[in-house]
Structure formats: C-alpha cells, structure tokens
Amino acid sequence: MSVKAMELFDAYSKSLFPKDAGYIISSYFSQNSAYCRYEIVSYNNVKSIYASEESLTFHTDGKRLFILVEPMNYPNKSIEPYCRSNAEQIPFRFKELDEITAKNQTRIYIANQANIAYGSFTVLKPTGMDFSILFYPLPEMHETMQAFFEKTLSKEAGIPMIDAKKAAKKIGEAIKNLIVQDYTTG
Image (cartoon, rainbow, N blue to C red):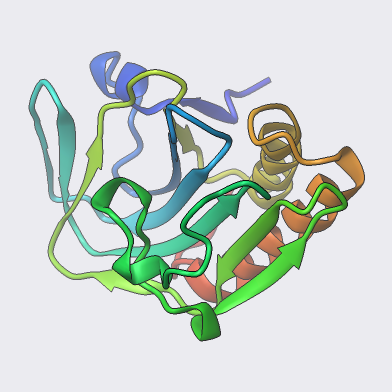
C-alpha cells in the first residue's frame, strides 16, 4: 500500500516530496477558540524549494482554495474576512464565499474561486494545533482529502459529524472544480 499523505515538513526532510504534482492542506487554528483557517494549495512542476526554520517556499505556480471555520461565539463575525487580523484573515468578502451553518451554529465558509500564486508560494511551519499535510497525486486523492476534512472538521473544529460530512463533500467538490491541476494522477 502506498502512502496517501504525509506531514509536509517531514516529507521534505525525508526527501519524499513529489515535485511533479500534489496538494498541501494547511490549517491555522486560533489559540483561544475553534476559529480556523484552511488553505489548500495544488501545485505541479516545482522548480526548487527554499527551506527556512519557519517555512518552505516553493518556486512554482500554485492554485489556492481558502476555507474558514467560525464558531458561534466568534466576536468578529460581522467583519469581512479580508479585513480581519492577519492571523484570522482570508482574501475574500462574504459575498465571495459559500456558507454552511452547522447545527451548533458554527459557520464554514468556502471560497467560490481559487487564488493563483504566480511564481512561488510559502507554507509556514505549523505551531500548536496547526498542521500542513502533503497529499500525494494518487487516483483516490480526492476521496482521501474529503475523508480528511470530515475528520478534522469534526474533531479539531468541533463541528457535528453530519455537518462535517456535508461540508467535506462541498470542499471536495470545490477542490475538483477550482484547483485541480493539469496533470494525470496515478
């Protein structure tokens, strides 16, 4: 059985990083609540990677999809996501996001368009509960990412499983429709 996913910085340090193509899912959790930002980056044809103590910078184009999880008691819910503090912002207005409201009133926002990073993009090294996971370009990659979101939305973001499944399915569709790269998997 082949490896489907691996922690990004671990894959890089073990030289198990596919330069041809892949997906990286990074999460950035608030220290004080279940507020979380997810960034999904698809890439192909990496020219080089620059590593520092705090990050990896990839010299290639990438397509990014942003997801925001906002708990019911989030105090800045009326502020547009692009206007929030750096730690809580994504580059979109509410009208550019699809919204799912869970039974516990947590809101999941999924960008309805991808951002393109021309030339390079950087992934910060995770701290605390944050993570960066590399998904290998295998035929079942999209199903693996959808199952991953079901689990993380339920366990880390506190979303009821029925709503986590619904959101994960919508995220999976967004990945397929917005950030699929032009490469053949498998």
